[in-house]
Length: 113
Image 1: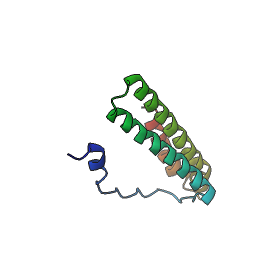
Image 2: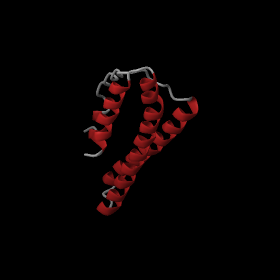
Image 3: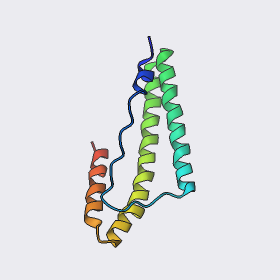
Image 4: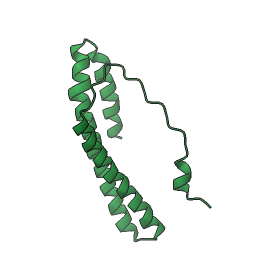
């Protein structure tokens, strides 16, 4: 029987949401840093899967889950920082700041849940 983790990978990708304002591209260096960070997180998640498969001690697994959550939070802060300093700033300068600020506030509120 195939692993449930592998079966879920076969899902079709979702279409990206259209921004309500102009997008500011990341530099290649910024994208590389984010990609490296995300690859590290992906490795941590795979490690958690192996820990579960190996029937490791619950506290050890939970400690790793906490580390992944912290790493994802740090990634989200970096993405939000770029969005606010780049995309939102540009939207404000172009006169479309209201929608960009509303969009940013909506996504920020998701982190408070």
